[in-house]
Length: 132
Image 1 (cartoon, helix red, strand yellow):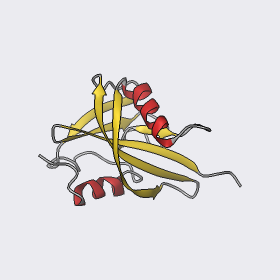
Image 2 (cartoon, helix red, strand yellow; image 1 turned 30 degrees about the vertical axis):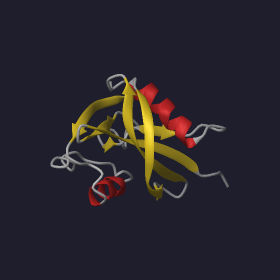
Image 3 (cartoon, rainbow, N blue to C red; image 1 turned 135 degrees about the horizontal axis):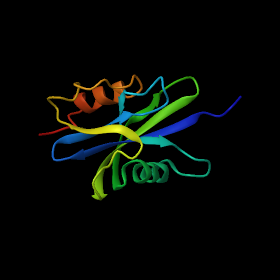
Image 4 (cartoon, rainbow, N blue to C red; image 1 turned 45 degrees about the vertical axis):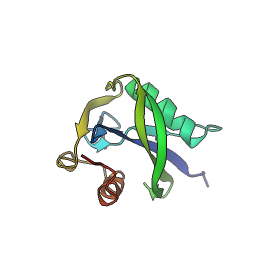
C-alpha cells in the first residue's frame, strides 16, 4: 500500500482579507478555488514544503503562524494540513493559477471553493480568523 500523500496549504491573511487561488489543473479541479500550497516532497518538512510552494506558485515569501485544525482528509490517500500565514516579501502573482482573489469575511463564499478546502474555510469563519 502506498503511503499517504500530505498536501499543505496556506491561509494567507492581509488587512482583513484571505488570499484565494483558482486552480488551472488538473481538468477535474480547474476553475475551483483553493488555498495555495501543494504536495510535500520526500524528506521535506511540511513547513518547508509550504514556504517552497508559495514561492513557486505565487512568487512570495511567507511567514507561518499556527495551524488551522488538524489533518483534513482529502481522499483515502491524501490529507491536508493548513497553516495561517502572512506575506514577508513580494506581491502574489498567479504563476500556476488562473487567478488570485483577496476575499473579506463578507465575500468569503462568493467563490466556488474546492470540496477539500471548504471545511477549512468554514473553520476560518467559525474561529473568526478573518477579521475586519
